[in-house]
Image 1 (cartoon, rainbow, N blue to C red):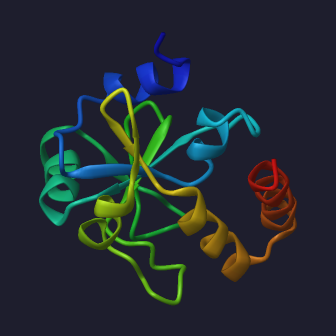
Image 2: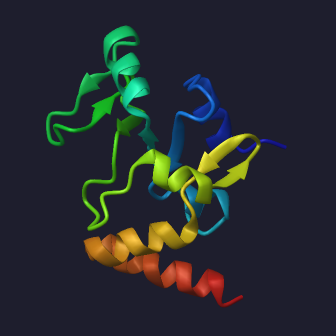
Amino acid sequence: MESDYITRVKALQLPEGQYMICGSAILELLGIRKAGDIDVLVSPELFVELETNRGWVRHPKYPTTIDDPHHTAGAKQSLDFMRENYSLEELLPKAYVQDGVPFMSLQTLKEAKEQLRREKDLRDIQLIDEYLSK
C-alpha cells in the first residue's frame, strides 16, 4: 500500500527523471519520524516549468527556492547549503526509490545534516544512527 507521503508527492505530477524528494522525507518513509513538507530537488528545466507554467512562486526567505501555490512543497535546483552543492544529476543515481518516487538516500541526508548542525539536524543524526544500528 502506498504511503500518504508518496500519494502527496505523486499529486504534484512531476516528470520522471527530473526530480528527487530530499530533506526529511526519507525519515518518514522509513518510519523514523514524520516529515512535514515536501522538499524537491529538480532539474533546471523542471524548475523553469514549475515557475513559468505551474504557478510556483519564489520563496521569500530562500531566493533559490520556489514553492507550489498551496505551500506544501518547495523546489531547488541544487543543494546549495551543502559544501558539495549537489545537483539532481549527481544525486538521482544514488536515490532510494519507492513506488516509483525517488528519495534522497539516508547517507546523503545524514551528510547534509552533519554540515548544517542545527538542533533539529543533530536530533535527526541521532535518529538515523539509531536506525542504522538495528
